[in-house]
Amino acid sequence: MYSLLCSLLLIVCISAILPGVSAFSKGYTQPISNRPHFATTYTEEDDTHITPSLNNFATREEHDTHITLKNDLAQEKHESGYIDDLLQQKQHTSSSSKETTRRKTLQQMLAVASGITTSPAIASATTSTTSVIPIPPQVRSTTWPLGKVAFSLLPLAGSYSRRATVMEELVPGKIWTFDQIQGVVAVNVPIRMVVIKLSQEAGGGLWIHNPLAPTPQLISYIRQLEKEYGPVRHVVLGTVALEHKATFGPFSQYFSKATCWIQPGQWSFPVQLPITFLGVTKSDEKLRMLPSSQYLHGEKTLEEEVQSLPSLGRYRYWAKKSPIPEWYTDIDYETLEPLKFKSVGAYSETAFYHIETKSLLITDCVCSVTKEPPKVIQEDPRAMLFHARDSIDDIIVDDEQTRQKGWRRMVQFGLVFFPSQIDVVPFGEAISEASKIDPSMKSLGEGSVPGNLYPWTWHDNDADLTNFNAISKNGKLFCPPILTKLILDREPELTLEWVDRIVKRFKNMTHVIPGHLNNYVKADAKQFDEAFDPLRSNPKEGRVYPQRTLAEDLALLQEASDLLTDFGVVAASQVCDLEEAREVGRFSAIAPR
Image 1 (cartoon, one colour):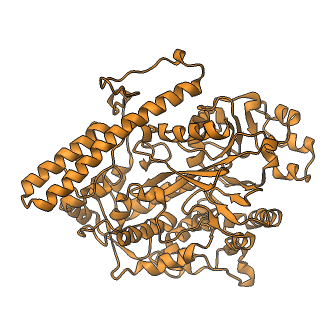
Image 2 (cartoon, one colour; image 1 turned 90 degrees about the horizontal axis):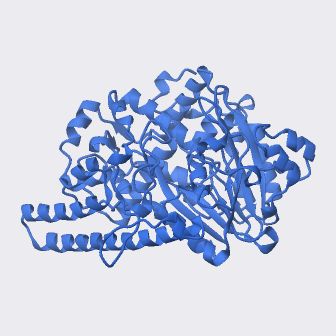
Image 3 (cartoon, rainbow, N blue to C red; image 1 turned 180 degrees about the vertical axis):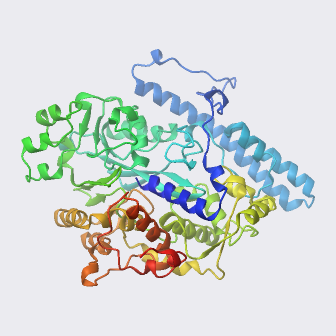
């Protein structure tokens, strides 16, 4: 739900301000015959590529592991050549003053990268571009061809493009996270999967929360964990949000013996379809609905629990036969029941608590951000450098300060969509400026920004730093404004009841692992509770808890809230009607209230 709402709002914003840009939003999905060809395996001896038959292996898992290891070998060889080219480029440009020779060297370097990685359309662009910021190679191990328009009308980073995975071990031998990127027009954010080692009392093996796109690289990481800690035994979808649901089925197909657990309240549009239509191939006891936390905690009888489950499929049968998940010994949880919108859709998620490490796993409802970009964002720094420019004319260098500047601006775009510290450049002028961009900056938006457009300028003297600091507060937890302005503020009582159950039941929590932005945030139950303060506002009593974001930055979300209410998409906000966002900011003149 988070990525879908972000994309739709961004389309509305761009279409209203920059007429004509929507022509770039259609995206495309290449026919299979036109997609880049990636070798399945690599044979060192003769440089030939072969595909071993599945019949040569005892299980699908052994076959997948063999393929992944071969892919890793091929990737290492390709990337080593890519790095060598970069070193040669750097040495050459420092010793030669002739632009023609420099251009030739760069073209050779980019030709190597594009020959490994890109579609024909991208290859033709990269090989003719002189750039000091290299484009990472797109190899088989970091690719999962979901399609450019998988989540929305806008092409999302990480859907068909390169999708690298960054692994972190949070608690040695117990908890690991895996981050990939997701974003639009170079506004990328981490999307996170969590893996927990279960105790023998909980059945042993691995428990996975909100799985990511099953690239060969990610599957290879999981196979290595399986060798040391046992097989993947449970794959859990703790949300109804589209960006997590889209990868749940394809990932679970790699682990045939694992049980899949899904969040109650799943929905689809325009036709309601069972989750088995979304790539989930499990059935019977291998496909389960998460039992309600009310039943697990003795607040609901088994019969009441069974009747609350969908009649479609075998959910009710298996709920009667095996009502308590075996992993419940290690991982407790509290579920926010589906908050349904007036038109279509819903919001729902479950907070999981790993008892031994006192860690709370959350999907979307809270996050944390600091000036340091997450590791997966720094893995390919071009998006940060793209946004670090004050205008399209700027020529920037890749250093720590520039990355932090770009990251804080990505955060502002990602959270409020239309930061108050930018001025929009007229569309015709933006097109003209894009055609004159310095060649060394062309790679920054390659593959994510149509035509190198940069249709805005940032206010001088790092004015947006104040706005970012208001959001960050040195990493203190907060509920994202898209939720407090468009979703949770419509059902504040139900949301706060859920929060209250979490802080009382998991009062000993020491860390929160959000599904986006900062990872493994040090926070206690009180700090988690305070993140939802904006929902405690009471307009009738004149009591308003301020949003974390400055009022002028909430102008677009406030306008969107009012419009969605007027059109009957969502109910009226119960808590946010006295905010200053209607009185300040660029939309104050047209605010309907």
